[in-house]
Image (cartoon, rainbow, N blue to C red):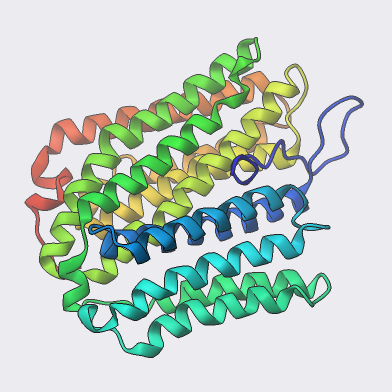
Length: 365
């Protein structure tokens, strides 16, 4: 679903002749598409985590139909707000209906009432199907409502589902989240085939973000999920697998979009929309990392050095973007990420595993 990964360059001010232009509406549309793709992926990951270890005929059929539904969604995205809106809605409805079957059939084994899977999957699927007959903009409101139902119902998932807690394979969950982040980081560098200083600086910035994630965040996630499972905190597992990684991925894609604009407009001032996206992308990335660390049980002193810098420092770039060319703004972004990376490394070295390893400081989430 490449179209769901790259919203393209962002700008909100009048374009200079010959430069790429995508406005705030495009950014909002992209965020909506990313949300629908994310929750479809979450449903697939959690369902396969619980019921896919033993491949049966029903699981094989479900996966096959789900792949078809995802293919329909991906093919429809380029024209999802136009002539392919119905196909996009059908794809979303189909994938939710197909994943409802394993949950319904195994409801007693995991301690869920029969209506839970019907409500969680059936209501969103119905909203997607009803939207086919509704004209915009109310059609898009129904799409948003369908995703909101899933998000809201997941908020009621807590530690009382003991059987669900014991059935989760947290290693698989950590691997799935990590794999998706790998894909997003890889897709985020599609523009680096361009030559020039801006592309080099942008690649360095993305590489440092990836280093932060795979050196510190991924290992903490693997240990943290195991600790949360042992403590019985299904709600915390939900937050760190379903909610917070979406913020991280949204941050990376926002940042990548701004870098794409910067590469295209090297030598010019970065448009306001792209500058905001650049700052917001970095900040959101570190917001997600800080929130996940706290949710895993890492105390405040384990994030105090790098989290405020990662969240707040990127916004110092915004006023500079009005006076500096795009390549200088990207260089400033790379410098900010380098500072936060250094602070993260110093924290990990100084405090050691007693603070940075959530398994060393067990606490009920």
